[in-house]
Every structure is written in C-alpha cells, then in structure tokens.
Length: 260
Image (tube, rainbow, N blue to C red):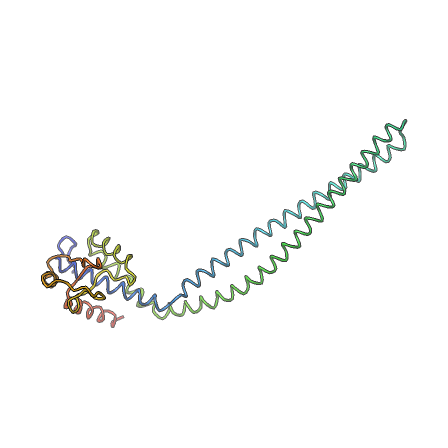
C-alpha cells in the first residue's frame, strides 16, 4: 500500500515527483507525435463555424428583404387604389381648386409608388448579391468540411494508435498527483508551464542538471544524493534529483508500460 501523504519522506516525495515527470513527459511525447494536426483541426472547425454564422446572418437578411419587398408591394397596391379613388373623385369636382387638390394627391401617390419600386429594386439587388455570396461561401464550406473530415481521420488514427497507453498514463498521472502534497504539486505545475520542454524535475548528469551547462557545486550534489531535502537548481528553477534515483524510476516506468 502507498504511504499516506503526511508519512512520505523527502525521498518518497522526490520519487513521486520524478515519476509524475516521467509520465507527463511521455504524454507530451505522444501528443507531440500528432504534430500540428490538433491545431489544424481546431482552426478548420473555427473557420467552418465562422462561415456558417456568416451564411446564417446573410440568410436572415434575405428573409428580411423578402418581408420588406412584400410590405412595399402592399404599399404600391394601396397607392394605386388611392389613385383610382382620386381619379374617380375628379369626375365629380365642383371647381378647379378641388380638381388641383386631387391632382396633387394623385401625383403624391405616384411618387410613393416610384419610391417603393426603387426600394424593391434595391432590396432585390442586395438579395442577389447576398445569394451569390452565400453560394460562394457554401462552396468553400463544402471544401473545408471535406478537408476537416480528412484531417480528423488522420488525427483519430493517431489517437487510436496510442489511446491505450495514453489512457493508462493519464490515470497514473492522476494517481501519482494524489501522493504529492499540494504545495509541491503546484510548484511542479508552475515550473512545467514556464519551461519549453515541460521538464520540472530533472536528474543531475555529469555535475550539472540535465540540459544545463551550469555546474552544480559538489556540496549541493551531495545534498541531492542524500535525498533529505528538495533542491532547486538556481539557474533553471527546476527540481533536482540524483542520477541513481532517476534511473530506478525510469526502469519502473518501463516495466509498467511493458505490461499495458
């Protein structure tokens, strides 16, 4: 059985931290093999969503134009009815003033009809323009969806190849995280987020921390080897472990992975 968190020695904590590092690094490697595919898929999905939103917006505008065209046509019918009424009234006028007044009303309604027809023409022109834009967008959408299908197929294939191992490693990462006190786990995650290769816990190799050219003083190397305290590399900010501990934990992980 695993020791309770409060009973862990410094060496236990170092081993747990390095185990977590090995597991997370392996997960990083698996994800790295997918290259830019996840980002490509995400970008394609975003682009498709953007085009679909645009098409939806243009479609709504076309519907609005259709409604406004119908409204203008009704206005034309009303004006035409008014003209007929005024023309009928002109047949029974008693003087020129009444005739002129009706003539002005007829002219006004005629102008209203002209304006309504102008608006209808504008709405129809915009509608045709939007329909052409939608047709072009639909064509691009079809192409993008086909491309997305291909890219998702590639990504799904890569994920399927490593799914069993990745699921196992994720479960182990969660399991080991529980055996690390919150303060150390937070520090580990913070360091990982700041370094390019995600290495927060590294072994001392040839007198320096792995990947570094700065020599670690002999006294500090002894402290690391004794495993009595958590030692931080002053140059890289990483947590340091001795090479023997690192080798032992790497072998344990290999044994674990060989049984998947």
